[in-house]
Length: 434
Image (cartoon, rainbow, N blue to C red; front, side, top):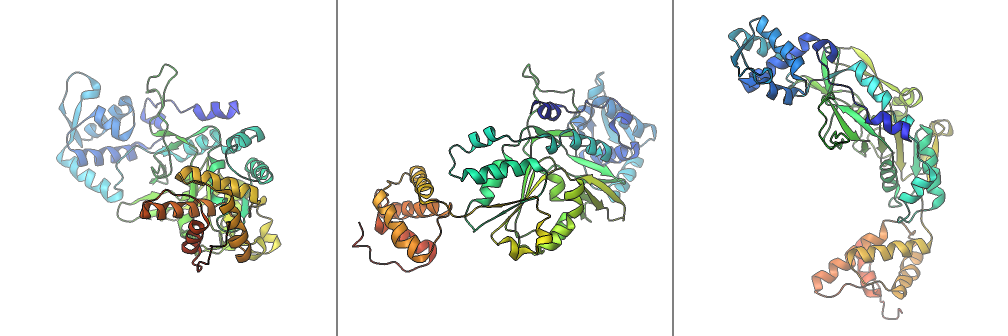
């Protein structure tokens, strides 16, 4: 929706003073001292690149250090941005104490209050998927239209979604593709500060930056560069997920925190893949998230015991190969807003995917050989027609052809060999096949 996009495009204006930054002057002094100790002599414009703060704010911070005889000017060209500072002898002692408290050196954090406000402005609850957009995006993808409509509506509900079905039916692919349709962008802080501590939020493995460009094509410099414009994030957690991972991760060596994955996913999508195979049980996981899913907020704790609230503003999709009744009882399952089944596909759809896989791998397709595959392999062995099989089987046909130096094509012999090495079943005589 246009309104949602307008909210997502608005970033805060750059602060002009320490007061406008929303940060404590002592925290900024510690951060600046650590930077000077790490880099030695440093010009303000270089400090601005690291700390992502305007020169006007840094002048206030560095002059504060100079006023306390912790830093001194060691170079000046007459331009404020090129004033060069270094630590004094007393400043080195101050910086060592600052490193003892926290070793974070990087973009200055934003306040928790500003973070909450920004998540609200870019909320995923403001976004809507419509049928036309979803169907157009999946026009070239083979999928049951009923499943597609169910997922589109579920994404608009703001409630947890359970996708269930056999392994290889395309559950994770469906979730990821829908996430890519979410309109708008999010603003992600490099870090936030709470209770005097620093929590790193931006994760280059999760967040995809979008350069801030004005309508005239120039890079924007009037915005607060402590924030990074990003595409709506997608976080996928599989069997490695544990309950401690959903809490703040404190590093006793560096003495600052990493935000948990669902905080990094704010404004986007969190997929719990293969539910029921984690080290944590589905019931324990859902009990951990009862309040966040119901109230759009989560409670986190620092190692000092200080507790605080963060937004829980994301779509959550649980994917499982198990039947819902094997996960928990009916009362538990009601916590999922939508339950969508993704199973085997009709033969016509399976054939279409097989043709597409052949085109992708440059393998010649043959209808008669494909019919043999259905009649002589899938049906006798009770193998359902799952979306993952065509690409895997055709890939093996291509592999054998490359090995033997021949043109890859779908034949009964080639399919039988691919099938045998894929499902670990003995091959059979195909000489009587069409």
